Amino acid sequence: MDDRRPAAPRQLGVQLSLVILVFIVQFLVLQYWFSSDQELKSLREEKLDNVMSTHEPFVRAAVMYLPPAQADKFITQLRWFRQSWLTMHEYEPELWRTDIVVFTSTSLIELKELGCVENPRSNVQEPNKCIVIADYKKASFPEFNYDFADSINVAAVNHPWVEIYDWVLRTDIDTFLTPAFATWKPSTMAVGFGQYSFDGYDTNDRLARIMKDLDMQPAELDNIGSTWYGARQLVQSCANMTMEMMLYLNKNEFTQEEKNAEYGAKGWPRWH
Image 1 (cartoon, rainbow, N blue to C red):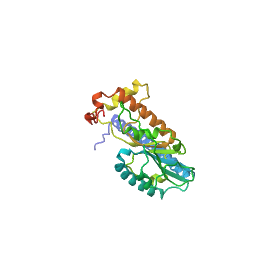
Image 2: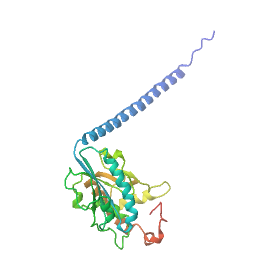
Image 3: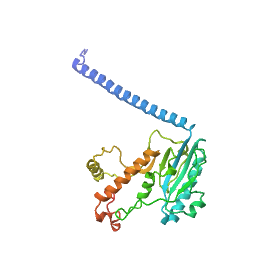
Image 4: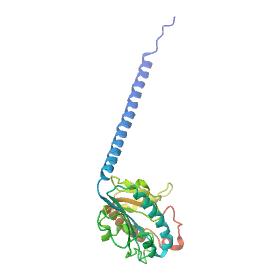
């Protein structure tokens, strides 16, 4: 009969391994549990706040720019946006209002045919409306000939007709509103997703160097899109800073060759 027993050191090693394994599993499970619970709590709180806010007056506007020189193209896009806006309104809370505010440089008969008017919202009870601000002055000048800047600059303009809005949506015309937007009021400003920072390029490093040159805080987000939704004054502040940065980059970070129209998109995706 073989009465040999396992060596004590070997038993102790196995037991210690099991104890350590249990602690590791507990740590991971507890970490997952509490982090998930916190995330769920935040999600529940945001949903509750959102539900509560639907019972209060809330006035917002989708702010966009329409280049009059390309009116035919952009009016077609606006027709689709307007239709999505009308559909979204069917799901909107009774006390909420959402206007379309179109900045352009002249009166256009096509906008009137869409039911847009050249007068401001008079009060928070007035039904949703499409408003045209037809005296907009373009942001470009000889040293800064960048047409797309106007789509950002209109969100920076503190026009008297815009002051009535609690929140604004800075968006382009070639977009849509979905029914989900009808009741959406996030706890903080929300932005869309863009794509300008790619692996294998030094774009982020160059932007970090520029921020350091300007004594700005390091960026914690990248690939921020051009669609912004938030409190009006915050969006206006962001748009103003964006315009300032556009002018700075145009003057200091692009060569004359890169700014030449013939250069086109040769700098994409590194620096364009």
